[in-house]
Amino acid sequence: RKEVEQDPGPFNVPEGATVAFNCTYSNSASQSFFWYRQDCRKEPKLLMSVYSSGNEDGRFTAQLNRASQYISLLIRDSKLSDSATYLCVVTRASKIIFGSGTRLSIRP
Amino acid sequence: EAGVVQSPRYKIIEKKQPVAFWCNPISGHNTLYWYRQNLGQGPELLIRYENEEAVDDSQLPKDRFSAERLKGVDSTLKIQPAELGDSAVYLCASSLGRDRIEQYFGPGTRLTVT
Image (cartoon, rainbow over all chains, first blue to last red; front, side, top):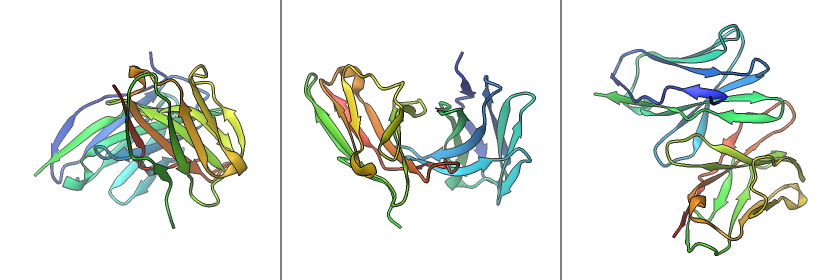
């Protein structure tokens, strides 16, 4: 079992819809959490850090559930430009572990 | 502000040949990372530097891979000799360091070994 797991998708949703996906981690000692987005054949770009109290940035909301060991990303009013792969990142001590990503496709 | 710079962007070599990748991090970023990313997978950390010191190289295949970060700025990742399975995108990233671990990635080098 991988230490960080994501549903690979693809999630195919219409423009304007709300979509959410999770990322589970297996080690309870995990410390920091992030969401990155990666466009096709491009480098990953930091989307947002995930704080214990949850945080919001415009249409994006990230949450952390330590009890169940997962983080989530919610995208409201999705845009065509949101189509990408979303990678979760978990750190533990000096380790940095990326998930394999969830592919999101927004259709007109 | 300039981002992370990598070169070359693409490289095609025959197996058993050597290859090197270069990375210039964002100015002022003390931490530098090298990742390998295969198609459909997330980046896999190869090595992390804090200034000049390699603090995590546990995933670096040391029989054929080497890296250096002279003067704590630019870094070079080398493979010698390359194998077919080394075909991947090699990403460099940097972060401020200490508690600031938000990473900023370069465009990557797409390596094809034939």
